[in-house]
Length: 104
Image: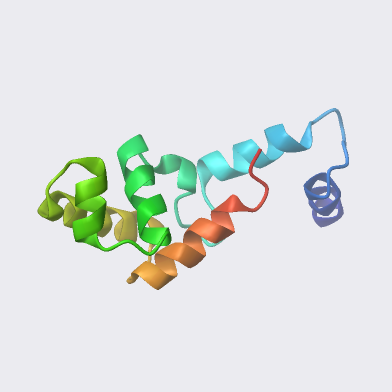
């Protein structure tokens, strides 16, 4: 029953007076189904760096875009990898794409 309800809510159906976006927001704010932190746990700057990484930019280019040092970008990159539980930019891209599912 729970899986049926979750599937219905994820497809946009309203169940038990809970709006799908509110339910999805709650799940994303806690953690993903694999126990890794959800994208919402990223700071604004981490999110900016993550989005530029997913755009294929190097740390040097990201530093120029954000007006920060390349070493600072590397710090953000390590933090992002740790929070997402990944070890590469490719894995971070996959993680970011997975977090986009169900966004409001």
